[in-house]
Image (cartoon, rainbow, N blue to C red):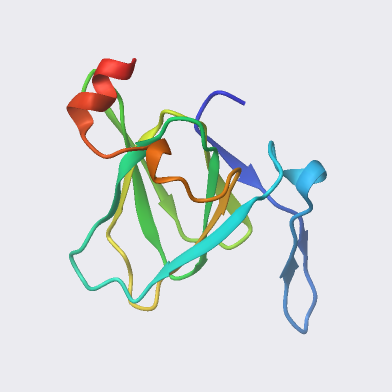
Length: 132
């Protein structure tokens, strides 16, 4: 997968409550090497504002909602509103993103294809543009 895309995960619906699950090879384009989550983001704050050189990522809003804004090298943007726990946003390497518009008690789950490596981050948009 080389494009930003929404992945629908299985939903098991039941009158007692619903269940969604993820299995590496069945539902993801990569094996999970790292998991982290964002929460308690104060109103008006943004998260992210970077790209990864090699890492792939899937972002899921487990609770609440927030927007993921993808900025292209030419300055155009795409906005994805995440507000359901049964789908995730796939971000291939070299995708500049930030998250904004967090609702109260928003909880974002991030599934990554690699362990943390600070050298994999591009934190300056102009530097990002020069990579493309």
